[in-house]
Amino acid sequence: MKLLVIGDFQGNFTSRLVKKIKKEEFDAIVGVGDYGGISDWRPWIMQNLRYSKVGMPYLTAEEYFGKKKLKKLIMKDDFAAKNVLKRLTRFGKPVISVFGNGDDGWYYYKYSKGLPSSLKGKRRFLRRLKAFKDITYGQAMFGGKSFIGFGGYMDIDAYFDKKTFKDAEDAEKCKMRIERREKSKSDLFKRLRKIGRNKELIFVLHYPPQGAFDIIRDKKDNPMNGKSAGIGFFTDAIRQYRPLLVLCGHMHEYQGAKKIGRTVIVNPGDAEKGKAAIVEVEEKNVRVKLID
Image (cartoon, rainbow, N blue to C red):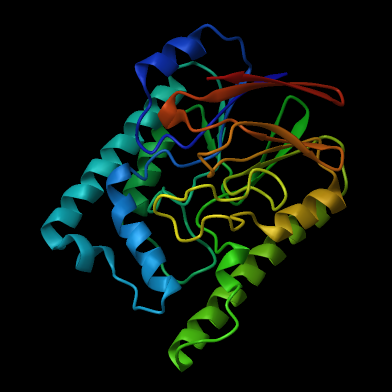
């Protein structure tokens, strides 16, 4: 079984990458998320990270961009994500996918109350993509393998490093985020217990596990440079359930394959910059070919 593994488009599926993919042979596509999340959002995200580091209040997108510009940005992002998803399904292969933290509104974030107002319309769009299977918080079978998905936005462990809080409200927000993370961890392990330890497991994640492709390398404008963006309980699940393969993204600064124990971890690189990977799974053997 050969898989085209791809993600982190940020709304940009280059013609150059499409041409490269057409030269490859594969049986299915595995998407690791961030079909949208265009670069226009980055200044706002980075500013809030800097504010958070010094205890300043969070700025909403509307406060930062203004109501009129925000509406245009949401429409632009929505159009870009739809274009990426349509192009993925045009290869004529099944697409097994999780959404990423940059795909707000495309998935039901089950660990917080409320649904994105745009979710219903986007779900109708996804249903028209006959080959597309969303396993953001689910699973699918393909080629005799169980694909276990976990995507969407997550609070990385590094967010909880601080020992003191500026006020009671800050402490309460941190408590809520910890509770939300514990719910997500419980959900993953509950699903895995139903399946049991199985050499035929493949994890499809957006965020990386701690210990592989997780250290932030961005000295220019990311105040979390040098910290881990990995998820600790992903690593716990890998060590306990020993999947054959883990596919992840999120970290644009990496492309390649590593191991945690005997499990192969693959980050295909950011598709926005023309990167992807072909991963061949044959019984217990995994071979990785990088597209760059």
